[in-house]
Image (tube, rainbow, N blue to C red; front, side, top):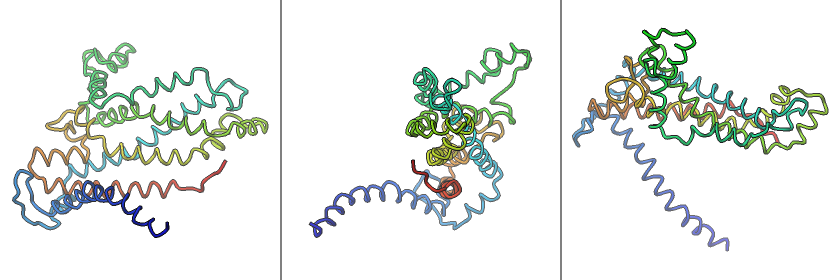
Length: 310
């Protein structure tokens, strides 16, 4: 039986490994090879230029600005989304009437979860159209309409949300948070429901308040789920291409005004498809790959702690 085990394992793993190498690893290697050339993307002709594309990136102010915008999203998006999702998940699952010490959830929690999760089922195209209507630069836009009604904005000069260099990236961040909170609320809710109620009842007998149960019981027991959510949100922050390209002004794939919402992915696609600098775009892709890889490893290392059993 032991003699036939290894051929059996190899037989099952051979096809998945071949597919992974051919569809994942090989394109990565090709991209790295193209990044060392002056390939235009329109022909088979290319000349080896070494690391010229990478040295060019170091002096490209637009790319460095796009890198900073990605870092901004990486720093703010996970923190804001996780905090909001944790707050609402805690309130729905263990935030019932006073005196229950976090043992009882609120009435109708299932319905609230469906309402919060609804934005997650919308496609990026629908999100872009919906929020472009919210951010319209006249009184018919929802955001400006509310501000005008409250007397916080002038009807003759409404706020140009997506055309203001100081606001456009915050507007994109708001859409990402709004669309992602529901998913992580459901994720954290499922993790909270797996925590035995006996733990909360024991804390209640010891006189623990609701805030104490959250920081000393709920959050430590949810830490692995929070860690996973952090990594996923970091990937979302790096992959906001579709939203920026469809919502922000700018010639080809958005990024405006004046590159103030430019991301590395939008700048990459513009160089690849519009400017005919495929080799330069491939160099950006390699930088994005290593940047994301290093970020994921660092995030897992920094947020790692001992597993708590219950």
